[in-house]
Image 1 (cartoon, rainbow, N blue to C red):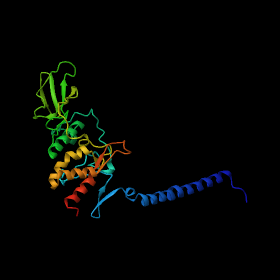
Image 2 (image 1 turned 90 degrees about the vertical axis):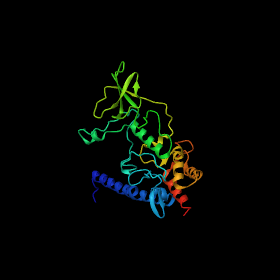
Image 3 (image 1 turned 180 degrees about the vertical axis):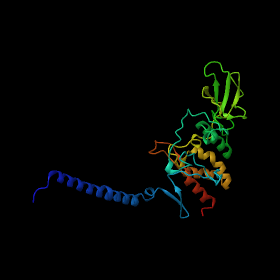
Image 4 (image 1 turned 45 degrees about the vertical axis):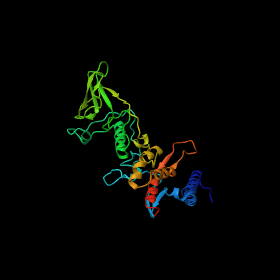
Length: 293
């Protein structure tokens, strides 16, 4: 039998290598890893699914909303932090808003706008934070005020004209007319409300800090980088505790004890911050409210 040409032998060797590696890495290895995971880490390997009454109610790794059919917070439940993933905690749209601290100017809704985007307007990151803080303050009976926010829940930002030199015109650009500007006068010039559709880009942007001290924690008004974070800070949980206790007819001390039970510490004792798993805490509250049934 004649020896096969060298190039054919090389191709046969390559084919054998592909077959062997496919079996090892495409079948044996995945099956082995899956088997070990199912035996030793069954819950985590299957998504850390949380059940109630024999039914899956969520994952300990993915946040979710605790709102009614109209999207309003259910007062008897702890609320999660905001999410920028789709309509909220959408695993197929996991993302941040990509808005930064310089995003402080709203595009006011303009009924006469040329398209839907202009008619609906756009809220800056600052106004989103201010609106969330105001809403949480009203829900939980605490102060929703914070620096750089107006009392009506938008960014406290002025546009000053001209951009350089002595001000001659000042506009509170995030407060649409006929709203009263959050400050009446700036450097001797009367402050105007914002007019939808007007272009204020040429003015100098002046955020106004005010003297408010924020009670609502930062994680309550900002989304996580993934938009899927299932945890809130212990500080945000404490803000919500009196409202939840009242709604459920439980002692505040009992609710606070449940918060501590469902608070996880820093990873390895030094990485990250403590967090409270909202889903697990709310399920524990349901259990406590029914007398453990």
